[in-house]
Image 1 (spheres, helix red, strand yellow):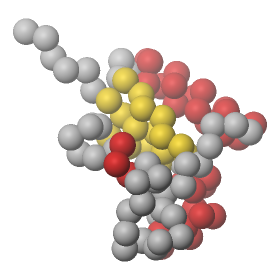
Image 2: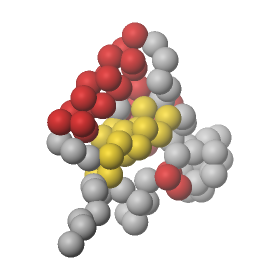
Image 3: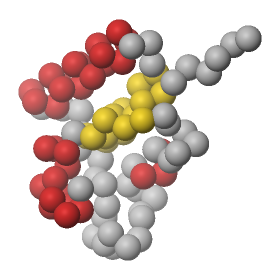
Amino acid sequence: MTTKRRTVAFLINNVVGDYQSELRAGVERAAEAHDVDLLTAFGEPITARGAGEVDRSSFYHLVGAGRVDGLIVASSTLCYLVGVEGM
């Protein structure tokens, strides 16, 4: 019997920059060490429409319950976009 490999999503604002690159590399190493697939989703968590509406340009549609088994959120890179309450 084959078991489905687990998938973890990593949410971050972008994948360039010293901090983001180091963080992403560490998450990739951890995913490999724990034998899970990693989905890296980057961008803005919400758009100017507000928290009440999810824009398709955000990454929310990529990380639904049926698509991933867990989330790693780089809140330090996303918080400036939406604030602490938005996170």
